[in-house]
Length: 257
Image (tube, rainbow, N blue to C red; front, side, top):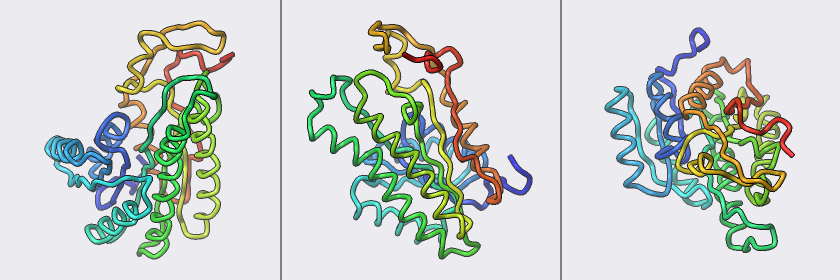
């Protein structure tokens, strides 16, 4: 971590922070003595995760339930952040979901709408609120890190809704980095390939490849992703990692298809 950029005294919000990659990121930030707020839709899961993280790190970890796809819920989330902490130094837009891996014509409108709300609209709404707070707080500025995915550049078969949202996250990241520049707000994106979570458990048994075959793929511990986010977060605001890919070395991304 860059000199003078430890987490002590800094406030972080991780959406989808109660499980999976989000929890791993929140745990790593807590170990760096950030004060961490985690959000998600399931209050019981959040409360349990926050209690365990606080006990393990001695950092302050707060659970704030919210639905990132709901503008009123997101506004309430950021009101609670401002009331509790007075500022926000780091937003990690991690919340997201997926839909059934089926041919595009079989995806229902309800599935399309749900993944758009969770993966893209949620990131936009949280970014919007974070920008407002980061512009007016003193000292001014902050950092936003978006969870992209390797699908932000390279799709898997039968993944049109997920891939569309992740390609859009790249556009949101670049626009945020540009619009935040005059206000000392940095924005970057981490693209993750096969971190070992419940969502990627099927990788070890076999997933459809671009050539039509089904094959198992290697995974990596979430800790490697969390360490990368801690590095990105720890940079002074004069420096930014615009895009970073962390992936299992032997996964078939390079040369896919």
